[in-house]
Length: 315
Ligand code: MEV
Image (tube, rainbow, N blue to C red; front, side):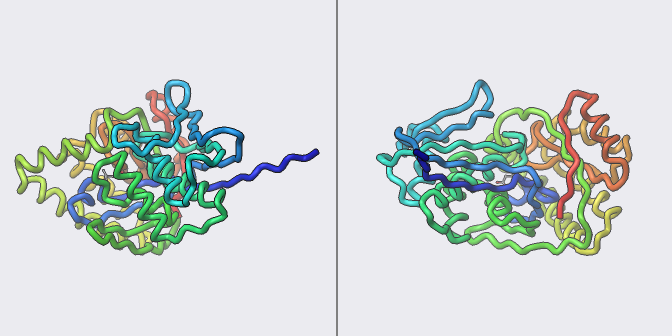
C-alpha cells in the first residue's frame, strides 16, 4: 500500500550587500541583492513531536524542538515563532530539514534565508499563504532573536529576492533597483570572528566614544550608496568598482574589516577586479569583487591563499 505523507517546502536566497552595511543601522541607505545560492526548508509529516534539523550545522549538525521560553536557545525559539506564525501547535507531528548551498555564518544572509525558508516551508505544510508583510514581520522577529537590532535589510532581500535600495527605520522603505546590466561578482569568504550582533555592538561602542568621526563615515557611506544606485542603473561598471573601493575604505576606518577581509580584497584587485569590498558584518566573513574579466583567475588566486570563493552574477 502506498503511504502518502504530507509535505511542505520553502526556499529563500542569501544576499550580498553591495553598499552600506553598518551605516544602514544608522539610517543611511544601503543596496543589497539576492544571491543565486540559498537555503531550503523541507517539512515532512512524521509520527513524532516537531523537530528542526540542520545537518550542515558545524559540529555534526543541529536538531532542536520548539521552545518559546526566554532562556531557550535561539534556534528553539525561532522554530516556536515560525510555528506560531502559521498556527502549528506542538502536538502536531512533523520534522523540518534545512538544506542548501549557501555558506553559513559568513555574512551572506544565512540567518535571514533560514528564517524566510522556514516560514515559507511551514506555511506550505499548512497550505497557508503568508502575505509579504506578514512574512517580513515574522522574519524580523526571528532575525531580532539572532542579531539584537537588525536593520531589516537581510530578511527583506531574502523575502523579495530582489536588488533593493533600502532605508531602515521604524517603517523601513525599499525600492527595487532596475539593473542596466548583470553584475559579475566573485564572492569570497572565510570563517568570521564573532557574530553580526557583536560586530554591530562593537561599532556602536566606538560611535558613542567618537560620534562625529563615525557620523562622518556613515554619511560618506550613505553618499556612496546613492552614487552606487546611479552606477547600477547606468550599468557603469568602472564607477561601481571605484565605489566598492571607497566603501571598503570607510568600512576599514569603522574597524569592521579584519586582515583576512583586506587580504581577499587585495588578491582580487591584484588579479584584475575593478573593485572589491567587505560585504556583511565583517570581522572576517565575506568580500565581493567586481570581475567582468577573468573571474576564474580571481577565484583560483583566492582559493590558493586558503579562502573559499565562487563566481556568480547579480541580476
Ligand atoms: C549584516 O548583514 C548587515 C549589517 O548592516 C547589520 C544590519 O543591517 O542589521 C552589519
